[in-house]
Figure (cartoon, rainbow, N blue to C red):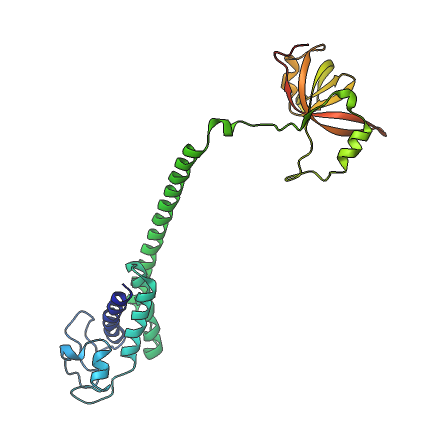
Length: 276
């Protein structure tokens, strides 16, 4: 494939030499008119004189008719195009952009001019490339989304989507004191990879009320311990003093008005079908 692309690049490079000459020399024919001629004697070139690279070497870098030297531009353009095509791979839009660049570069280098035609062709090729790139990206995104959704349907179960709270152990409230809190504090700091311990206890509500803006949080006293359930104010109508509930919680040290006391930071509440 690489060899084929390189040969194709040599052929296109030969055509680019025609463009470089005819777009920059005022008296030259239009690029689509007639066969190639020697720029010195204006004699038409034979087909065997137009074989990329081969003719340059076979003729000894001289015109068959007038014996004038052939410019190094011709093999250089052909080789450059061949290398670009071989490296790029099969991508006609990129080939067009590379060809425009080669014509502009050598036109500017040899004649000090940049043909308007190449600006127009280059702009159009860049527009097509951008459109192709956008469509290709959309295809990749759609295909990626399709593959991910299929994989998710195969691998993810409904149980995996349920939020699960991990409880470290059941704990009777009479076991909670400052010694336990200080012992747990030695494992701090808590976070990802070192989660704060979660305990579970069955307790009886002594009192409850909502606190915070718009009553978003639930403040309770359970078995003589203060407890706070953030964002659970909506449960105020479902619970009452004397109810037996099961709570999952962290131990927290609450400081207020210079005093400190332990409180239960509630993470979840179960309040149905509990028995004494």
